[in-house]
Image 1 (cartoon, rainbow, N blue to C red):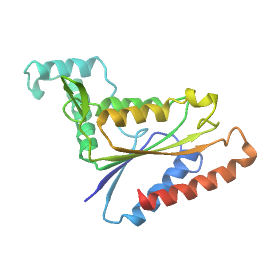
Image 2 (cartoon, one colour; image 1 turned 90 degrees about the vertical axis):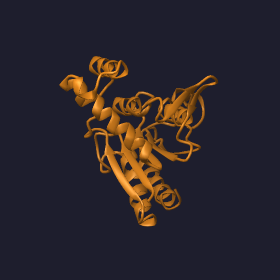
Image 3 (tube, rainbow, N blue to C red; image 1 turned 180 degrees about the horizontal axis):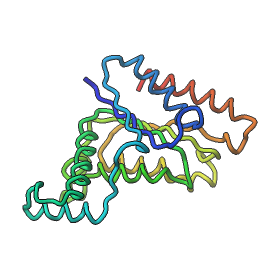
Image 4 (cartoon, rainbow, N blue to C red; image 1 turned 120 degrees about the vertical axis):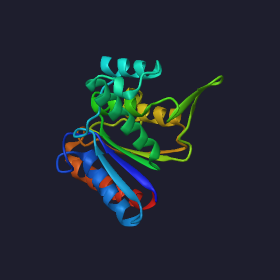
Amino acid sequence: MVKTLYITAHPHDERASYSMAAGKAFIDSYKEAHRDDEVIHLDLYRENIPQIDADVFSGWGKLQSGSGFDQLSEDEKAKVGRLNELSEQFVAADKYVFVTPLWNFSFPPVMKAYFDAVAVAGKTFKYTEQGPIGLLTDKKALHIQARGGYYSEGQAADLEMGHRYISIMMQFFGVPSFEGLFIEGHNAEPDKAEEIKKNAIARAKELGRTF
């Protein structure tokens, strides 16, 4: 069975968010076209995504020095254990769908915390004499992103760091197929916002059938 992680990083739902509206259109269409697939929704604003902090570093250090998991403090156990759950879930999936807005040229910080959780040597990549090599070579990924302005071309294109970051991480993990679906310009041209949203939803539905 194909397992798909539908990973959203927005505090609002599809009624208030263009990225979430396109994401919902996509995933509904995807489920209809891929009835045998398992789809798991990770709402990063509601999930427990530990940040890498002093407890995590000390917990990892104890484990690397040979201590057993039961020798960690309660905070270390909770955080290190949860990070392990997230990375194992990520590796076990076959497809990834990331849904984010473009905020301050990037994405909400909870998405960065999630990538920190799943970027684990020996799971998603490994170190070699030739440098790091990605281990997720049989996966595919999609990023759905709403941008209030226009960032696909022109001077603003160099400022976009959300999709660019996820693209770099997918390359780092060895994911061979990565696509982007962008909704842009609805703040720059509010009189066209509904048309932009309508077109994005139509494209999302079509992509859901073929992804």
